[in-house]
Structures are given as structure tokens and as C-alpha cells.
Image 1 (tube, protein in one colour):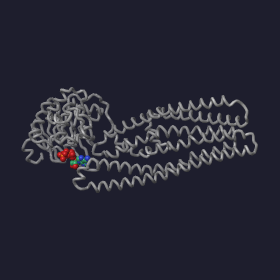
Image 2 (image 1 turned 180 degrees about the vertical axis):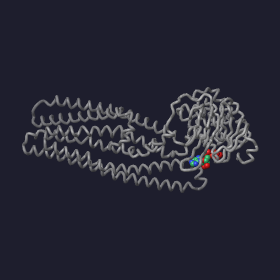
Image 3 (image 1 turned 90 degrees about the vertical axis):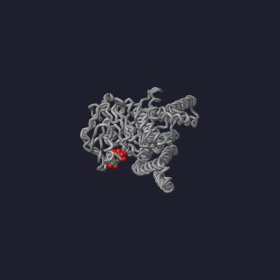
Image 4 (image 1 turned 30 degrees about the vertical axis):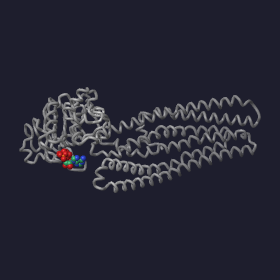
Length: 559
Ligand SMILES: Nc1ncnc2c1ncn2[C@@H]1O[C@H](COP(=O)(O)OP(=O)(O)OP(=O)(O)O)[C@@H](O)[C@H]1O
């Protein structure tokens, strides 16, 4: 089955696919040569005429050449497969990184990026080249067989047509069911990821048993759906095998009938038998390649869903130069979360380079949404977000991430060493700079207490650290960034007041001259602010100079 969308996605590798098909055709030609030569050797031996040794030498040479080509084909296929996987995963991850965090489904995305792409490898490197081989080889072998025996050639032509076409009628149904099976698989993957991430919570609320029973039910549903698929798929294999066997038998019977009838075609009976084998071999290999590539084919919906994310969010700008000054401007900015009336509206604001602005407000007032707009996790539906006078959309993703660094409420870490995690935004940071940033974030004792200090490999998402320690690690990491704009979104909420004060004193000193936005519930986190802005229901409700005043806190703007 040729899938138009998958052909488009193949993009960079049509050359490799054609190359693999060419190798397949040459291998088939060698096999046909082998069949014809073997047929002539056997005929000569039966007749007791001629010298069989030159033909034997040809057979040996053909066998060696075929072996060499099969040997060459494997690395070519592996390279082409790797190229497809890398290309597709790069595209998918590019899109995923542009999908707002809140709209991502990690489990489904993982199923598509890992299993779906892996499955597609066989579609591109085995199925498509073999399809091209099938378009050429059986027809050529039939034409050749006609020169030996007209009847046998015609029988082969009919059987080959049935063997190639009949299973294709099955493919559409197989693919439809396969897509449903893929949906189940992706959902199950998503449920597993969610359950794994929340095991402690599930245990706490005694829901672990219920969740694992539900997952077991879903897994059983997937097993049943897979078995139904296999049954359907076996019918296809059976149809093809039937046509192959019948075709071979009928072609040989036709050739033998000529022998019995004493026709001049009699000597060719053995050759016809061997050619019939070569006529159907590519068809059988196509069936095997189809089953290998079929799982990937069913993932095409998942691939499309990820790749079809709204262009407004995906499209990158062209300015590759990061912002230098850090002037942040919001011009009547509005954003609503999809399907809700919540978000922010009418935000107009200018922050000069080097200013430290505190953004305060009740829970749900829109503070984190402002941070998301500044890092372009979401794009405004109305108005503009400008950086150094240029719309944020105008920057390339790389330039943007070098211009604005947002430290989120719930930072993410990698299973790398502490040092490598700290160097995320500036891999070239010196040892002294790394230690200075850690010192500023009051991390010296924490890192000193780890088994290998800075060389300690963190657990997944730094789970061996406390919430407050993780927050400080995220702060230190951001301090190492060279971005002129830093946004700290409630990054000290898990710290005691004394540590918070020391960390924020250090942050103020380290970020002096840079544009800093402090989102906080407690005004103790904003003691160094030069200005404050209070949000209420997604709008700017009040502003003032200096740190947010106790009055603002008492009036309920800070909670
Ligand atoms: N992913 C989302 N999908 C739908 N609505 C959302 C989403 N994230 C936030 N909201 C809604 O948008 C509004 C603003 O949320 P936001 O997270 O910006 O508030 P916040 O001031 O940062 O709150 P908090 O102080 O509790 O972190 C809230 O009404 C919230 O419920």
C-alpha cells in the first residue's frame, strides 16, 4: 500500500529507497540467471550432452554476487532507516517543543515518537523498495517464461496478478483496524506514563489497585485488538500464499503437459519450475515487508496530529540574533486557553532594560500565563509581545531562548550530572561560574552533600532533591544563562523565609543590569523589585514603584 502522506514524509530518502529497490532488482535478476542456468545444466545432464562445468562456474559466480549484494543491502537499509528516523524524530520533536505544555500528551507523544517512528523504518526501507521490485520483476519473469512455454507463462501471469492484487484489497481494511489498534496503544501508553508519574499520589489515596486493574483491562483490550489484527493479516498472507502455490503448481503442470505431449517446450520444464519460484519470490517478500512496516503505517494519524499543530505556534521567525538590551513590551496582549474564557486580556506594559518588576496577584490571575507568553510557549491571540522592539515571533527559536529564560514553578531536570544540568543554558560556563551560581542559589551545602558533588548524576527530574532544592537548582541554572531577560515564576515558594531572602538577595546582585521579572505570591520574594504590577482576572489591576507594598498584600492582591 502506498500512503501518500508517508511518501511526503520520506522526504530526504527517496534516493536510498530507489537504491534499495535497484539492489533488489539486481538480486532478482541474478536469481533468474541462476534459475535459467540451473535449468540448462539439468537439461544437459538429463540429455547427457555438453560440458556442464562452464554453467556450474556461472552458478558459483551468481551465488557469490548475490551474497555480496545482500551483504551490501543491509547497511544501506540500516543507514536509510536511521536517516528516516532521525529526520522524522527531529521534525516531531521540533513540533512538540512548540506545542504549549498544557496541550501535550506525553504518553501519546512518546508512543508516536518512539514506536511509531521505529515501525516506519521497515515501511521505508523494506516495504517501499520491495514494492518497486514487485512492479518490475514478476512481469519480467513472466515475459521470460513465455519464451520457454506460452501456456506456463500465461498461467504465471494470472497467478502473479492475483498474488499481487488480491491482498491489496485486504490492506485498506487492515489499515483501518490497525489505526484503531494504534489509538488503543497510544492511549494505553499515555495512561501508563500518567500512572508512573503519579505512583506516590495513587498510593496515598489508595487508588493504586484500581489504577493497575484499569491498566490491566486496557492492556487486555489491546491484546484482543492485536490478535484480531493478526487474524485479519493472516487471511491476507493466506490469500497471497494460495495464489503463489497454485500459480507455481499450475505453471509446472502446464510445462509438464508439454513434456507429455512431446512438444519442443519439454526441455524447458525444469527452467519453468525454477522461474515460477523467482516470479513469486518478490511477492512473498513483499508480504513479509508489509507486516514489518505495518505498525508504523498505523501510526500515521499520530504523526499527522503532532505535525499538524497550529502554524501560528510552530512558525519560527528569522531573526537569529538574540536580543541585546532586554526591553520587554506588551501591547494590548490577550490570550485565552483553548476552549475556555480564561487567560489574560488587554495587557499593556513596558519594562526597560535592567528593571526588576514584581508581578503579583491572586492565584489564577494570569501571572504564569504572562510568563508563557514571554517565552512563547503560547502566542497572543490579540496584541503583540515585543523584545527589543521586535515581535517575539520574529526571533528564531534559538535566538528567543537566548533572549528570555523563564524559570517555571515546576522546573524540569535531566538525568545528567548536576554540573551538566547547571550548564543547560551555557554549556561553556567555567567551573568557577558554575560554582558561583550554585553559591548564589544557596546550593553549596546541598551539592556538597551529594555522593559525587557536581558529578552526581541526578535521578529522573532530580527526584532525589527536595522541592526547595530543585527550585534553587533551577535558579542557579538560569543565573548562568546569558539572556538579557530573566523571568522567575514563583521559584522560592518552597523555601523558608530566611533562605528565600538570601537567595533573592543573591539573585538581585547577579542579575543587576538585566531585565528581571519576579512572579511571586509572597512579597518577601520581591524585596528588590523596582516596580510592581498586580494582575486580577487576567488584567493589570494596579501598579506601583518599588517592591510590592504591604498595602497591596493586605488588599488581597498578593496571597
Ligand atoms: N492549561 C490551561 N488550560 C486552561 N486554563 C488554564 C490553563 N492554565 C491556566 N489556566 C487558567 O488561566 C487563568 C490564569 O492562570 P495562570 O496559571 O496564569 O494563573 P496564575 O496567576 O499564575 O496562578 P497561580 O498563582 O495559582 O500559579 C486561570 O483562570 C487558570 O485556571
